[in-house]
Image (cartoon, rainbow, N blue to C red; front, side, top):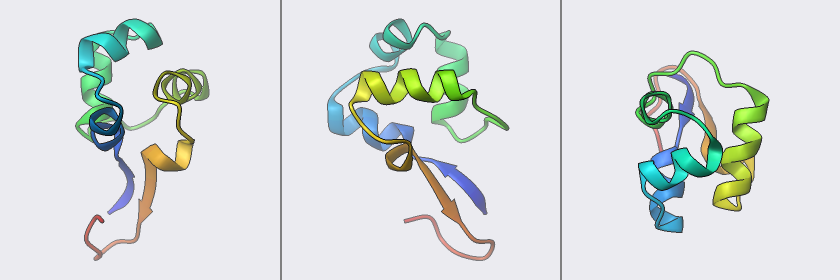
Length: 73
C-alpha cells in the first residue's frame, strides 16, 4: 500500500475543516483535498511543516507506512 496520509483523522481530532486548514496552511482547497484523500504523489516539507503547526501534531501523526498487502490501520 505504501505511504498513507491520515490527514482527515487529524483534522477530525482537531475539529478543523478543509477551508479553515487551507487558509492557515496557505494551500488551495483543491490541493489540500488531494492530500486529504490520499491521491497525492508528493508533499513538500514546508507544506507538511505548516500542516503540523496548524494541527499541533507530528508528521508521524499524518503519514503512515503500510506495507503492500496490509490493511490501513
